[in-house]
Image 1 (tube, one colour):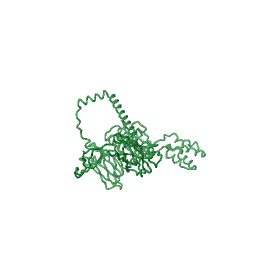
Image 2 (cartoon, one colour):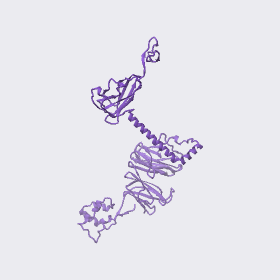
Image 3 (cartoon, rainbow, N blue to C red):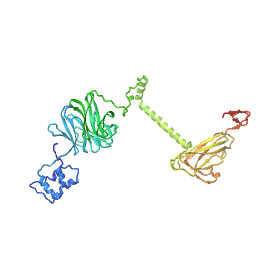
Length: 511
């Protein structure tokens, strides 16, 4: 690799002031390395790095030894690949593309080995993929140690796109226009050159090496991945084509021409073995069954009916009156929302299904009225809607018109409410009016109750907890009652009939 001259203006100042005619001032010598110790990002040569590590007594001899030599910085190659110079033919001249330890990409001339292009990266590259020609247009993809993939194009000194990975890359292969990346999380990812993720495949073991399989006779390009379980998986996009099992773990792969065979796979193993496999000329790769992908029904052509005249007229109408139709739709939508809000407010005001709105008292109240009158059975269903906290010491009160109704107990205490269980509480309501009128009864939990031990004080000063009051309408009492039939007139198994008051005839009820 050619030497890279130092381009930093501060770097030559360490040794350049000293020569044979200007002696080294020993007292001022320690002040020269101080700027470079403070700025670690300044690239230095090997001589300067060695000079900064010396003691004060050794610096003078070191400078005297190297002051006549030119300062050059030599780096280490981390990855390399080839790039076609001006033609895309298989046997065309290619340029060497190098990734170096100093976070640079170098394109070398194939004849003079001079640097044709130099590009900088934010991190050290470890994998390279190239497409295009150097003299026309090319694109470089570099996977770096910081877990990112950078995309560079012609005449760009800095990356144009960046693909951030969730794990460190262990391989990079370009298949047509898709970048296939293997990560140390045992996954294969497919990305576009702009960084959009296309698919992800989970591997059965860790990925050790990756390479491209290109069968030119069938225009097939696939990805080969050597795994830690001694298998080599071949993927076309995310579909598994074939699995090759080897006696040892494969550490490197290469597919191409070997002798007279165009399709040859060469593998090296961890134990130092070499495996050569030749692909049959009549071999056809078939996607394995059961792999993730679109179902076969997706490729079937749908029997779409022809466009009718009505459909065409409706389409033209939507184009011409699209704005008016949208406004009408929005108006109807606003009216629907308004009606829903009004219905919600009405339900809250009438307490059709009272549920506590506070987290301190998570209660749900529901009542059922049974009977035809004049005596009704009122069953209250209480439920604790909390998740783990029981409720103790609650009171349930009834607020009603004492002229129309009478209750044996106007309030009573509620037992311990366990979360999630339904507790029925029963009481009876007697209608006192014979005029056929009805009223409402309010059922709920009071906030303040004067005279807790006295039932006569229930209808006086009461304040109800918000959201815990139920309002229920009692039916109009009926003049019909269930009376026992004469056993002589009823057949066995038909013991009750519905008979009007003062009437001798009745309607027989089957059990």
